[in-house]
Image 1 (cartoon, rainbow, N blue to C red):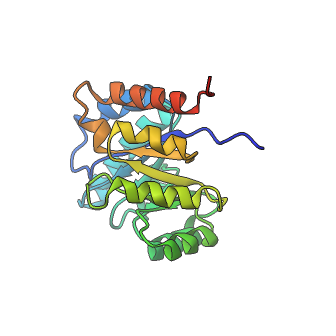
Image 2 (image 1 turned 90 degrees about the vertical axis):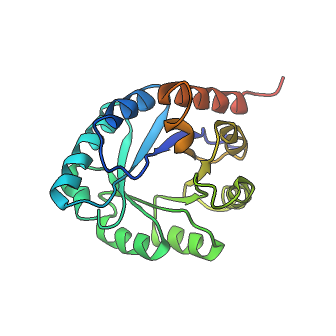
Image 3 (image 1 turned 45 degrees about the vertical axis):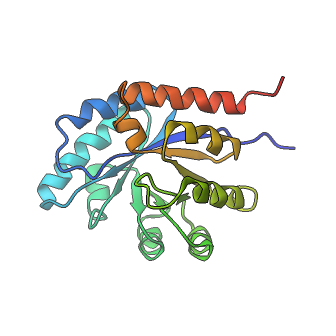
Length: 212
């Protein structure tokens, strides 16, 4: 039997309307663990302001070895200009359009995906990953875990499961998900984002440790 994939972390930022205080937190969080990618969500603003914010955060993520993906309404035109590694779409239709536009030069992922049919359509279209769940409490984590458990053994397209709490990371790693995504659980952690990322990494290591 082939070795199970090693779960890596993905960080999802809040919808950012200012970045002065956030940049340092992002750098610290990415540096503290095995963070494969950061989804940078940009709040609405004029194009010049958004591009400036995108460039700063893209460079911060990439400097620590993480891929930087832009997300948010109308950010597609900023992907190339900002130096981002790719685009994260919020729905299947947008993802399929982005795949045609950006692949294979850029990474394209999509989520949260609710229906199985949409997830399969995005995977078949050539997405680099599909994402299940959210960290806003809109859908229960048990549903995310069920979708991950269905997807991982069947499909080759990598899967992202969103952990609503740090404890959820262990459950996702136990399902052999390729990426465990964290949002508010990192940025609002009482001991700071770096501590949260480090703790999540430790949970993944424990989940992957062989049974005695």
